[in-house]
Length: 174
Image (tube, rainbow, N blue to C red; front, side, top):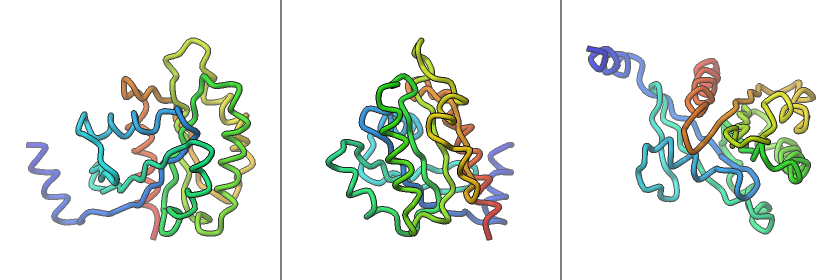
């Protein structure tokens, strides 16, 4: 019965598409998140994730420092930015902050909403979402919609809550 209503709503309201760029330092969990969202499908280069009547095209871009200058090639037409942080990696959280700040200063990303996945929450020494918010300086972002979600990519915890926020942001855009 639920599928009948879902099909009806999709037919009435159509489907929105959202271009999402997922970035973060290497080993933060980006590919694992993408794999989990695709429900175990083999992830190719540009997967599309269908969720709540929105089609997310997610670009999972490598996070090694030599690759990061290439991130800007993906910025055009990006409506949402998912920044994945390894919450357990206290030594590199400042590096993550610098990369995030560098990206948010890019003109092509000025209108993009920001979702931060504070990943690896299952690890005993992981920083919580409030601590990551502080370390990344998110409260200073006054001209941008942002949200932080505690996640565990291996179990999937928190991933769909983050996508809920992203989809609601898209629905509220003109």
